[in-house]
Length: 337
Figure (cartoon, helix red, strand yellow):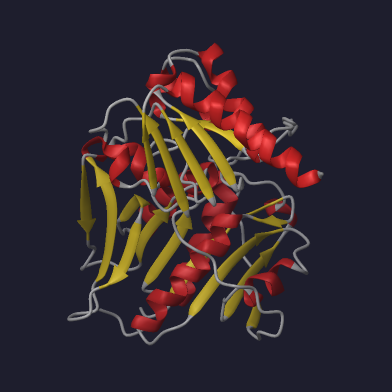
């Protein structure tokens, strides 16, 4: 192994100048890994007119921020970003590279890994350094989420992994934190992989992203149909939260994909997660088991969801949920008196 292969690098994704949450989460995990390796953390920041964003990354824990500021990177396109990240990694030769498993990260990561002739472990849920030999262990669900596979890449550097948003925990921001900000110039080659963005069409939604919601009321197959989700929405409104769902409800067409929690959906960490009519398959648990407080409502007393619930209610959700909503509304009304 090259003695240069020591640092832990993360790709700091920004969209319209806004650093994504998963990038800050990756810095937190990178610091844990770097500490175990007696190394440091570098964030790669690509875009255009990025004066303030680099300092933000330092305040969240990056020791160094390598910035490629170029008009060609204002809007994400595959080839320029791939060329820029590849150039940085060839120059610095880090040991580990972490990328968020977003739409952009899933496009970028494999292409960079291919050009560096190294491996990439996708959708990791756990990353650690093995104490006895300091090997980097990348754990991800396999076989549809029915078991967890731990993967190593002992012979090639960098060791690369993508991590789903919401899996890791970001550190507290420290405005007094100091770090090195390094401008990095890239000579872009306009090859036959280049595309031109003619127009960016933005979809505006009034709904809160379930990954940022503090309270989620989630429904599964047991809810029975799209119209029955209304009672879940009533409870969510009473609690000041959002409605989510399991994959079964999305596959049945009862809820949209952006509401799905689980291995093939989103990973969430709300303060309160109310699971209604959800059996608790391992794929679903992977997306919500880190919630602060879990309430499960299911008529099957042996449902796996009860194994992770703080409070389990065995019974008919169509009787329990409306009653619960009424009690919460009454309590809220009394508090206002």
